[in-house]
Amino acid sequence: MKPGTKLKSAVCDTEVMVIKGKDQVVECGGQPMVETAPDDKGSVDPNFADGTLVGKRYVDADGTVELLCVKAGAGSLAIGGAALTTKDAKPLPSSD
Image (cartoon, rainbow, N blue to C red; front, side, top):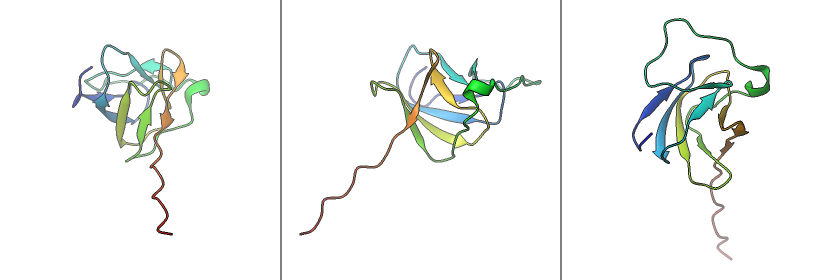
Protein backbone atom coordinates (compact mmCIF):
# COMPACT_ATOMS: atom_id res chain seq x y z
CA MET A 1 0.00 0.00 0.00
CA LYS A 2 1.71 3.16 -1.18
CA PRO A 3 0.36 6.68 -1.73
CA GLY A 4 -1.69 6.91 -4.91
CA THR A 5 -2.86 3.29 -4.77
CA LYS A 6 -6.58 2.80 -5.38
CA LEU A 7 -8.28 0.13 -3.30
CA LYS A 8 -11.73 -1.36 -3.90
CA SER A 9 -14.04 -3.08 -1.49
CA ALA A 10 -14.70 -6.79 -1.90
CA VAL A 11 -18.22 -6.45 -0.44
CA CYS A 12 -19.64 -3.06 -1.53
CA ASP A 13 -19.07 -0.12 -3.92
CA THR A 14 -16.50 1.71 -1.75
CA GLU A 15 -13.30 2.84 -3.43
CA VAL A 16 -10.48 4.75 -1.73
CA MET A 17 -7.15 6.29 -2.68
CA VAL A 18 -4.24 5.94 -0.31
CA ILE A 19 -2.94 9.36 0.75
CA LYS A 20 -0.60 8.23 3.51
CA GLY A 21 0.39 4.90 5.02
CA LYS A 22 2.20 1.68 4.26
CA ASP A 23 2.20 -2.02 5.07
CA GLN A 24 -1.35 -1.98 6.40
CA VAL A 25 -4.30 -4.14 5.38
CA VAL A 26 -7.31 -1.88 4.97
CA GLU A 27 -10.68 -3.53 5.46
CA CYS A 28 -14.07 -2.41 4.22
CA GLY A 29 -17.28 -4.04 5.39
CA GLY A 30 -15.22 -6.55 7.38
CA GLN A 31 -13.17 -7.84 4.42
CA PRO A 32 -9.73 -6.76 3.14
CA MET A 33 -9.79 -4.25 0.27
CA VAL A 34 -8.26 -5.26 -3.07
CA GLU A 35 -6.76 -3.42 -6.05
CA THR A 36 -8.99 -5.21 -8.58
CA ALA A 37 -12.73 -5.44 -7.94
CA PRO A 38 -13.93 -9.05 -7.64
CA ASP A 39 -16.63 -10.30 -10.02
CA ASP A 40 -18.91 -11.52 -7.24
CA LYS A 41 -18.97 -9.48 -4.09
CA GLY A 42 -19.59 -10.89 -0.64
CA SER A 43 -21.84 -9.38 1.98
CA VAL A 44 -21.09 -6.54 4.38
CA ASP A 45 -20.44 -7.59 7.99
CA PRO A 46 -23.17 -5.89 10.11
CA ASN A 47 -20.46 -4.75 12.56
CA PHE A 48 -18.78 -2.78 9.75
CA ALA A 49 -21.84 -1.38 7.97
CA ASP A 50 -21.73 2.33 8.84
CA GLY A 51 -20.89 3.24 5.25
CA THR A 52 -18.41 5.63 3.64
CA LEU A 53 -18.91 9.12 2.24
CA VAL A 54 -17.41 10.29 -1.04
CA GLY A 55 -14.85 13.09 -0.67
CA LYS A 56 -14.14 12.39 3.01
CA ARG A 57 -10.70 11.54 4.33
CA TYR A 58 -10.46 8.65 6.77
CA VAL A 59 -7.61 8.28 9.29
CA ASP A 60 -6.59 5.77 11.96
CA ALA A 61 -6.21 6.71 15.63
CA ASP A 62 -2.45 7.31 15.28
CA GLY A 63 -2.78 9.39 12.12
CA THR A 64 -0.36 7.08 10.27
CA VAL A 65 -2.90 6.10 7.60
CA GLU A 66 -5.01 8.49 5.54
CA LEU A 67 -7.44 7.42 2.82
CA LEU A 68 -9.58 9.54 0.49
CA CYS A 69 -12.96 8.02 -0.36
CA VAL A 70 -13.53 8.37 -4.13
CA LYS A 71 -16.69 6.24 -4.28
CA ALA A 72 -19.16 5.76 -1.44
CA GLY A 73 -20.42 2.38 -0.28
CA ALA A 74 -22.26 0.51 2.46
CA GLY A 75 -19.21 -0.87 4.30
CA SER A 76 -17.15 1.07 6.84
CA LEU A 77 -13.34 1.27 6.78
CA ALA A 78 -11.11 -0.37 9.37
CA ILE A 79 -7.56 -1.57 9.97
CA GLY A 80 -7.10 -4.64 12.14
CA GLY A 81 -10.72 -4.41 13.24
CA ALA A 82 -10.31 -0.80 14.47
CA ALA A 83 -12.66 1.57 12.67
CA LEU A 84 -11.20 4.54 10.81
CA THR A 85 -12.67 7.95 11.51
CA THR A 86 -13.25 10.93 9.26
CA LYS A 87 -10.62 13.63 9.30
CA ASP A 88 -12.21 16.90 10.29
CA ALA A 89 -11.08 20.27 9.00
CA LYS A 90 -9.31 22.54 11.44
CA PRO A 91 -11.41 25.54 12.44
CA LEU A 92 -10.28 28.89 11.12
CA PRO A 93 -9.00 31.37 13.68
CA SER A 94 -11.38 34.11 14.57
CA SER A 95 -10.66 37.53 13.13
CA ASP A 96 -11.23 39.34 16.42
